[in-house]
Image (tube, rainbow, N blue to C red; front, side, top):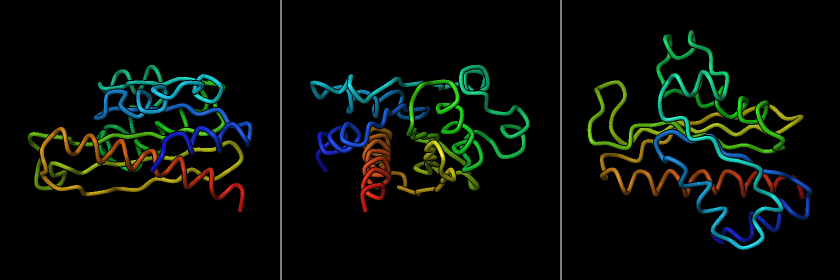
Length: 159
């Protein structure tokens, strides 16, 4: 996938993008802003590694975190919605997961939850289990999947 295609589609549609990242630590924002001219469509990126940052910067509910845990579709959804509320973006993607090493029986290494929020649309959330491929690989796969979610959202707007 060419990241420039995401930026071109966003530019053509007048869409500003924001990211809300946990386990990727800003990798999606870096990938987007590595392309010259990205400032026309990239509004901001939130790196909310701790639960407290998710609460304070994105407005994730402490109750949601306590009930479902940081690695959950519920938190990913609230992260994406929070990025929309706390920015001037029209489209946001969020990532929260367990890149490794580690994990548990219920939340294994390689499980990553994603959220996608767009003004005027229902917020989507999904989980991918990339497996225990190692921290670097899980983070790269998560970044790439988040970029694919952005691309698909923009592609659907034109069809």
